[in-house]
Length: 256
DNA sequence: GCGACAG
DNA sequence: ATCTTGTCGC
Image (cartoon, rainbow, N blue to C red):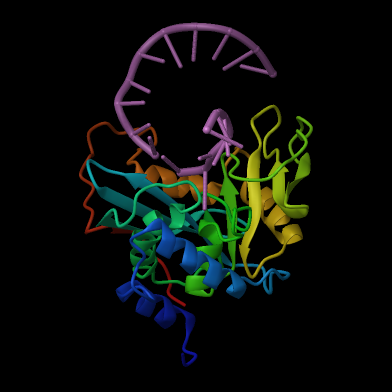
């Protein structure tokens, strides 16, 4: 593959998946085993100026909707967003979540005008049976640094962290630390943080804390979530519901 | 063989 | 993930 600018690379991937998408668990496992070797666990090269939150929701039968919210960093204000809906290409099977959620996510990423410096996934990075959770998978496919922040555990052992925000304990799997169990908010259930790609354990912890300054989940994930499940903040004007949406694209932005 | 099991 | 109101607690 020749090197081109990042946005073109993303757009290319979005048009067609890199390879025939697996249909069976066996094929999907083979893909994971093969691609896991491409994961780079290293210090984050540059602090991102833009971070993308990704969330996927299920619609009425068979449809999967991906939402991407791009926020500036570290301010965490919304810059732009994109949506994509596709028929489910894979069933939900623990350990193979990425094969179900990634296709529409790539399509949505391809609609972005600006290239994020970090992808934040609602799921695991390397804290996975084969070290290749959705954050790692998406990171390798896009070539972008990625982080996984999951609401629950997939694999690994850990000690319950303290109840204060910032308290954390190592998530250990097969005698190796694969992430953290991090309390992002005092007195609330912790989240499971792990690096996806082009990021290390230290960076995953720092970013998770910076991305979730107020609530349990990262601001990126929260923003993407209410896009994927159509929530509206409290409106002050009950009358003006005249909001036009053109096939899943909103907000203006200044391209890269 | 019996549990565990991201979203 | 999603179906769903009220309720308990800081």
